[in-house]
Length: 281
DNA sequence: CTCCAGGGGCGTA
DNA sequence: TACGCCCATGGA
Image 1: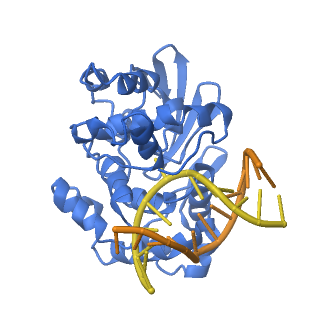
Image 2: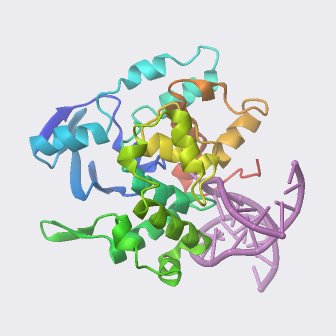
């Protein structure tokens, strides 16, 4: 068990921020996350004191980085222009959200599934994939499932993928498996590319367009300047920024600001569980 | 460039 | 019961 005092760290918000789908709350102040073939319990003991159910080694090598603890989010928030009152309000409302360092392969599959989809269904699809094709992880009495590797999905047919609630996205997953097995999509290799080259490679993958590519850049490769434009950001652009997408999109921390805008724009959904005020563009 | 199908679950009329 | 919508994209 590792104990840490952390500021700008709100797991409830991170769990609802739409960047990860295998992090959930299990009780008051108790969260569980599955990542990198591990299960981690995180508990909020008091105020800013958190307990992580892992050894020092794992904390230093995996989780410290996973939760992006070295990054100074107070400084990122302080960089917001004084004139951008909407983003300042969004940032204050979203304070505690961090951009997680997640596995590139998992992000490729996750955000292929996310396209034109709703978050509860995205979660279900991912859990079905993991239960059927991921390796087992023991955690005391409980048994969990890791995210399937490309090799785990190599023999899976289009029909079997369809049974994971993927809909028309099944064919994209099948192509992604081939891209990984053939070496076109190699997280380790791609992480050494510059932003432009990385995005170009991602866009060449079947089913990956600008929005999904930016999500993979931001959540899988921690390119904090990537700015995914989804329906919520478009909505903010048309309703708040006079038809333009938010001005902060060119910032070094555009991706962080995108998370703030996304979380803030969705606050009514998060509070009521319903989509309200929805409109196209 | 525009238009539209792709699954499926949930909300509203 | 029908229809709109959802962290979009490829193809016509």
